[in-house]
Length: 199
Image 1 (cartoon, rainbow, N blue to C red):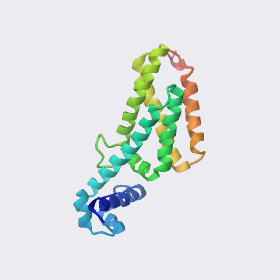
Image 2 (cartoon, rainbow, N blue to C red):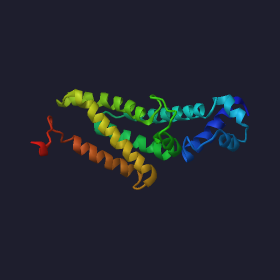
Image 3 (cartoon, rainbow, N blue to C red):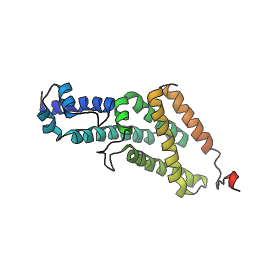
Image 4 (cartoon, one colour):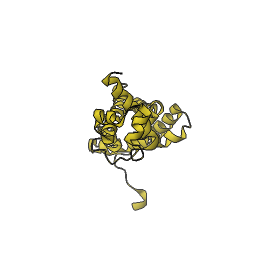
C-alpha cells in the first residue's frame, strides 16, 4: 500500500470511528487496530488523534459546503433555490450519514473555522446575498436579509439533525414541508412586522 493509500485508509477508518463513538471515545489504538497498522503509522501520517480528526472534519465540511453551494448556483427563483438547498442538505445527510454525525458533534479540537456552526454561518452568508437581491427587488429592507438567512439555514439544519435519526418521512417530503413552511411564510411577509401581543 502506498503512503497515499494508507493515509486514505486511516481517514476512512477514523471517520467511521468518530461517527460511531465520537472524538473522546475514539483512541489512536483503536484506529490503528481497525486499520491493521501500528500506532506509530497513525502518528507518522497525522501527528495524533487531533490531527486526523481535523482532516476528517475539514473534508466533511468541504463536501457539505460544495453540495450546498452547487445547489445555490442552480435556479433563479428564490423558491427553487430554497428547494435545492434543502434537498442538498438532506441529500448529504442521507449519503454521508457518518460525515454529518461528525459535523454536528461538539469537539474539543474544533477551531472557530472547523465547527458546524461556522459552516452554517458560511452557508447563511451565501443565502443572505441571494435574499438581499430578492429583498431589494421586492422593496424590503435589504439589511434584514442576514436575519432571514440565519432563520432559513437554521430551520433546515435543525430539521436535518432531527431527520438524521428519524428518517421518516422520505427526504423529498421533508424538503417539501420545509419549503412549504418557509415559502408560504415568506410569500406573505409584511414590510414592517410587529408583535401583536406587545401592542
